[in-house]
Image 1: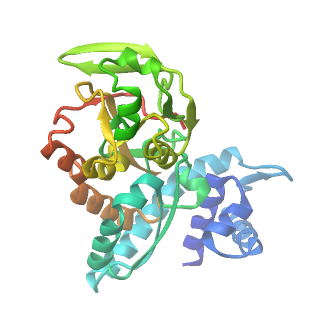
Image 2: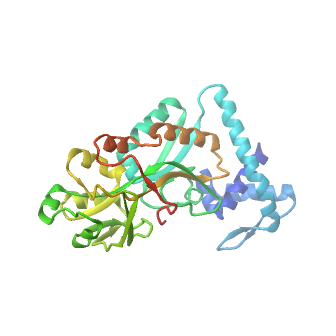
Image 3: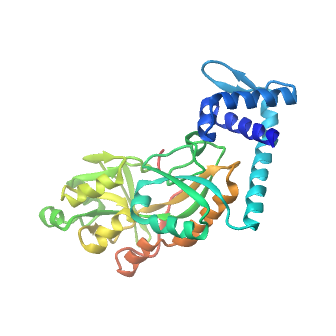
Length: 321
């Protein structure tokens, strides 16, 4: 058991390139991590890390050792989780990072359902509108539209995220509703700074595309600020339907250029291929996929009202991190 714990500590130090960060994620003192690595190096008889005041990096022998260690840790943790499940519900902590828009509007029911199914798993949830590296941040999974920040991360698509242009009825009455994409040049625009090609936009209609450059009066990394900007009658914004659906359904916002469709992104679960909580993480991802389905409930409501079409256009380029 001591050897396995030392190997697990070794893999985390290698992934984070930091004794201090590994200690933080394992919730032990840094001296404990140092001792475990020293014990492991003495056991295998070779140094595993080059150490300096600035960086910790693997030796060539350490790189070879890491390949099998990561798989060993994953298999051992999965086996323990599965054995515990035979006696009842899986246990332990699952740390998740998610987009603010998803959490504030639509995630409480997901968490409640998961906790009812697996009452002995404790969830720790952090939120932001930024791309993260789950390994460096110390979480098991990030739910985001951004591409993975490392080639060592896995990205599993969960459901599409649509975008729409919208504004308040008061603004559109005062300024006039655009009839074609180029009419947007005559309006104050609020745009999300992390969309790909955020200056050049492609609008789809009846099998045709209309591409143009748009200049934003407000550029921000917060979709909720954009929603408030529109609700204050300040201009036209482009936000995801997962944020816009409720004010659209209530009439506080109206679609702009509803006859046109923008490409969508996938919200994905991003996690380490060698996650120490792979079994619990798989249960969580399966629960999310089952809950939202291919057409999330907020999009289903808008489709039922005839506000957005069923057909979507996907893009191979997710949002810029």
